[in-house]
Length: 206
Image (cartoon, rainbow, N blue to C red; front, side, top):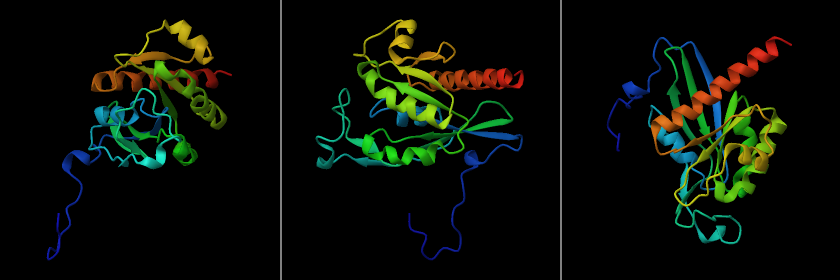
C-alpha cells in the first residue's frame, strides 16, 4: 500500500486493541522441532492477525536441516511467530513461536527471556528432536507442557509410554492436539495455565 501524499498513516485495527478490562499479560513460547506445527498453532489460536517470519526454503538447507516427515514443506520460520489470545477478560497471553530448524536455534535464548511457560510441540515420528528442546527449557527454568500434534501418518502411543520415552516427570502434562483447530490449540494453552497455577500454589506452600 502506498501512503505517499497522505498525511495519515493507518493505526492498528480495532480488533488489535487490548480490551480495557485487561489487567495482566504473560509471555508463552511455543517450541519444537522443524515442521511440528508451531506456526500453525499460533495462527489458529491468535485473536489478532499473527506476525510470521516465514521464508522460502532454499538449497542451502539440504544436508543441514532435518525435514523428515515434512518433505513437502516449502517455507520455514527464520525468527519467530507472534500472536495474542485472551484467556479471560483480565488475562492476555502473548505467544511466541520459535524457529524449528537447528541452524536458527541460537535465537531461542532471546525468545525464552521473560517467558512464564512453554508448550513443547511433539511429532511422534521424530520424538528424538524433542530432547534438546526440553533440555534447553529445563536449563532456563521455564516450565512446560508437552502437546502431541496428531499427524495422519504419525504413530499413536499411550500417554505413559510417551512419558517414559521422553523421560518426563510425572507432574508434566501431556496432551494430544490438532493445532489446525483453534479450540484444540486453546485447550493446550489452558492446560499450561492450569499447570503453572498448580506450580505457583505448590511453591507458595513450601
